[in-house]
Image 1: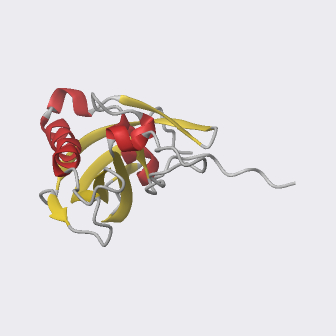
Image 2 (image 1 turned 180 degrees about the vertical axis):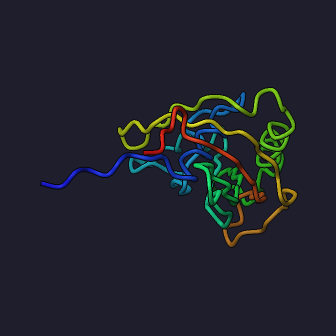
Length: 165
């Protein structure tokens, strides 16, 4: 019988949860994949009213001597009005602005994060620093009704109460 590997949060899970705890955001507004804007029954998806943020790891390095993670993540802010062909740029920009402002709030950056994904609870993590390595920029997509802003975010995070054996 093999011993199960220890459960550890990933950079994307930590980043998504950190953004989800910014005032005005919820976990339903952040993920690694942009969900469809229309549900299977033809109704609008809930995220259409709030906007959505996707996170993708694009670089960074773990600390070589300590259990500290230093990822760089691509952060994409999305908003849409299905069928309008007029992207709601202000809504996507508001998401981007809230994330930018959260990186300036030095007192609130470090907070314990309870991470759950697909019904699995991961050990708590704490972001120690967060800063943008690029400004949010407007991107134009093939889909005419999507507003899309993108930037890169660098995090420093640790697993709470981590013990090295």
